[in-house]
Amino acid sequence: TGSAWGDWANYTDSPLRAFESELGVQAPVGFWDPAGFFQRRRSVELKHGRISMLAAMGYITPELTGRLPGYLSPSSNLRFEDVPNGLAAFSKVPAAGWAQILAYMSFCEISRGPGYDIKIGRPGDFGFYVLTSSDPEAKTKKLNAEIANGRLAMMAIMGMLFQDGLTGSAWGDWANYTDSPLRAFESELGVQAPVGFWDPAGFTKDGNENNFRRRRQTELK
Image (cartoon, rainbow, N blue to C red; front, top):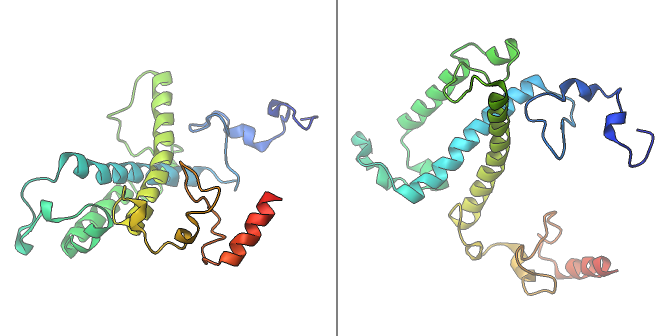
């Protein structure tokens, strides 16, 4: 750009310019493609985002509205209300139920042919236009919102799964994760709300107090 804090717009030779008008190019990062991929991965991103949005709502809705009435599997005498929320449901759903879920997922994937959306140059377009708009500006806004919400949902559902696995609930009390090695340092200086003991890199996961003291000394210096 001609300056250490120059305007990115001055770098006119960037190959990323070709995608600056694409959906999902939003502030603050603009066109973000650090690995240099696009069409197929945009299609995958949309699919994962849509699944994650459904999954996140599937986690939340039963807690707020309750289960459906009736039987999930009459032959197994299994009612919907007998199926717990979250990861515990995996062991409750009958094999035939999982087969139906996988069959429907496969149908959605190949009903128009593998890679159909990429072949027509519109990643994520599978002919479902219920929520679209005839106004180009409104349509672009909706499609951008789908990408942004899908990205958020992917982060959200992974957070729910980890929280569920560690505490027994997607919004469980962290105190239930009694096996955490981080418990050894909860009373240390610097452990403050809202994050509590913050060690995202896992340097203290071994629970070694000597290593913790050494790193605290380095941090303070």
